[in-house]
Length: 364
Image (cartoon, rainbow, N blue to C red; front, side, top):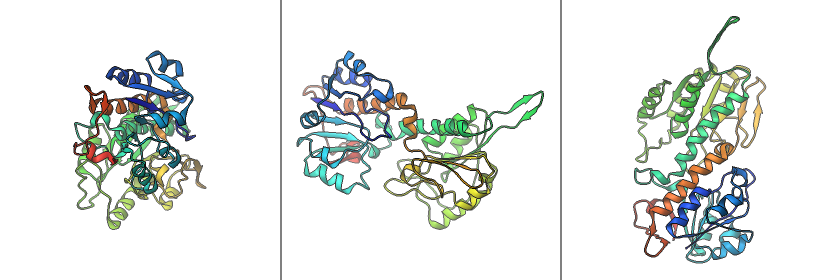
């Protein structure tokens, strides 16, 4: 079976779908692995590193797409490149299937089996291939490092002969994978952390990491059966926003992580709350790429408000640590391929009835 990993073409994408370790694993299964020249250039993996573990390096992107049995990539492909895939091929990447009707239709018309990484079930069996979690973990870490870098103050308390420096106050909104890592990282740097989530079990997890939980009575807020927070009603959301405002005003750093699959994320911090924050404070919005949780955020940019609050709406936070982000993402790809690998036929087995594939196989 011929597996092809093309180079990412989106200028903001620094990650690679396969790293040399993943390539070595796939070749060990019996696959032929081809990578496009420059695949790992932005995550510290030269072509030679792939060649050393047995990959073929090609400059013929279109020709290899047309002959590949399975294609791995990070970002969704263009309609043109879907049209270059052969019938019966398998394509695995992030696809944003709720918002990409034309792309999904094109996959179906091309008779390609398209697997969406976003849709992998959050179960114990699928944990090793859960790319959403592996990347969110790194995004949470990066959000704190970026905030620390943009502040004109420090995170830890310091007692000096000239006086005591108070620790930074960090408020984390949303205690999923990214939020938990943000809490842990901020605590390691010595900050005083407060956290909020609509799920009671998430607040308990935050407290286990040393954060203070902000508890707001919103009524029924049980999570989904896959562990995600449910979307709040307008009344619940407004109550949450009001309760958070006081904490935001007292915080040096606010990190928001609330994303909603297939839809624009909720606005959790409105302009009046931003206006109440102190000069020099920082807001990092991990949902900025899909619209943001903060009123006034500009996707892909950093802006400073009239009252001196820095709004950071960068895209691809995990791509800021591209080598490690590629390492864990490539492991997700390799683990998925290995899990469904037919050792006798040396192929990736498509099975729409499988408990994992029935969640993430979008076209077949």
